[in-house]
Image 1: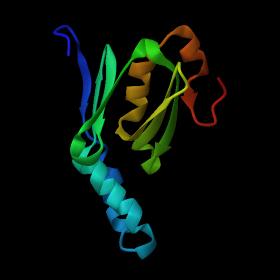
Image 2: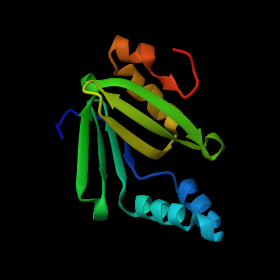
Image 3: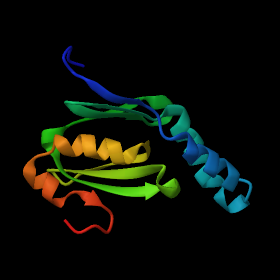
Length: 132
């Protein structure tokens, strides 16, 4: 990280995602979702700065992905947990996608990221089902 990089958010997924998944885990059908939520809570970390978005995850948090805002072509948000948290799908210029699950304060995070996007990316970004 550069010395003059300002951190906006650093942390893991929203705790509500874990709580809801654990409650749903009591129904046998939702056990895989519960396991996925526990793994996210243990090893997934987000770092959003004024220069980049970093996601650390994977088995025991060994994988790291960094994206600079100039690479982003589109961001789509989906509210979850009655709007308390949400998911984002970031599409890069090369067509690859990065999914950010259970982002706390996702509307604030999206507004912060959108300020740093190119004008063309701003025009096509937004919430699921919204018109650009």
